[in-house]
Image 1 (cartoon, helix red, strand yellow):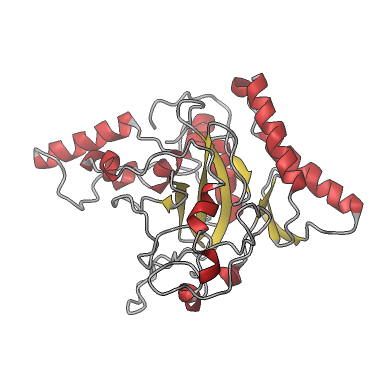
Image 2: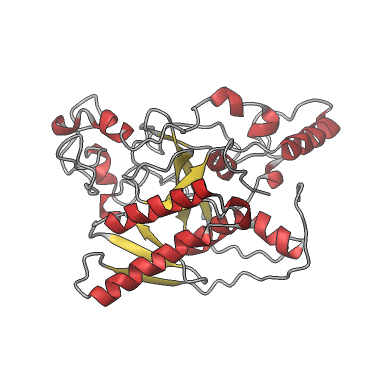
Length: 347
């Protein structure tokens, strides 16, 4: 679509996805070794010819070491068609999206002290009035900043407010922190041709230009995106983003990304659509809902500290619209390379 090298390889995505569950504390050493070995294959998969540098291999070894050391008991394994696994530290029962009664519950990980990096579960206490945290976790912001790499993109709404950017870029481009010049120029061309000036605010005439997960890889291999599948489930979406950008590294929430990487998250509204978030320098998360402005609050208007605890239900309960969006499935977290380190693809 935009500045893509096309070759003659003809590959078709297969949507046969297997979903299995497991326990990382399994006493069967053989099974446990197999799970770690399979996950290591997932990490090895992201190494491409372009990035086989000594420094990059060191990052991969360090990441695999951290994953082997992890001992969380609650996880789901997602297996895509290439046999690649991703550990997903996520409990639906702790999610405000699934259970709205959690809206008054502490929005922090249930850590015991500032150096407790093995905590995963959500704190069960209610928030102190006027805050987002319980009495025990009022220093949650400082705790969450311990998982930052120092390469998180700045939260700069003005940088995404240009009408040709805002109207043609989406959550996927924001997640990757990439604005594509060719897309911006095409949007400008569309708007000025029809209106003799910029598009009216809120106009969706450039919405078809929005980069879509998997399109870069599909166009590169087939020359077109006409045969793409539209299955909005976590394994399918993970397959797409890793094929577009093999440099992305699946990761737990409470693990600092490698040097020159920042953290992002992916969710889906099953069989409807997808959404992405990215980490801010202060430890919170932000996102770009479609062609709307970038935002640092969830569906309930609250700051996003931990995306898998946040309210992601944008459906109107008084509206019977079948297209109402509710991101009930949380797919996982990813370490994303900084723009100055590794080029990221999207189309």
